[in-house]
Image (cartoon, rainbow, N blue to C red):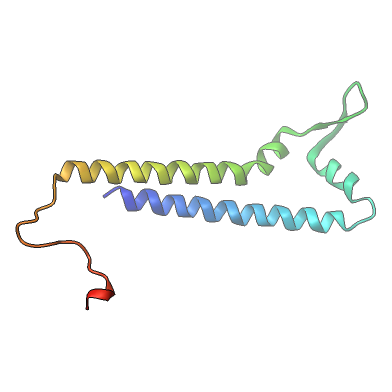
Length: 112
């Protein structure tokens, strides 16, 4: 039963993605309150050096850190799809359901 493991991992990745994205949004909002907020954000994301056109160059580590929520969300989607595929494989390997003893399906509350 690998399907629940994949789905729980997917849920964990999704929650991590939401948590880190929320943290980043709060940080950006708090920094933007300052009068020089845009310059502070630029210095936060840059490595402090400029290129030939006097533009700040992006720090590679900061770029990877600020992309982690999207990476976790993509991983969450991949794990969920893998869980769906594992469920389909498990169902296909078990064969057709046995209907000779009656229905094995869960009945709704309307029939009780």
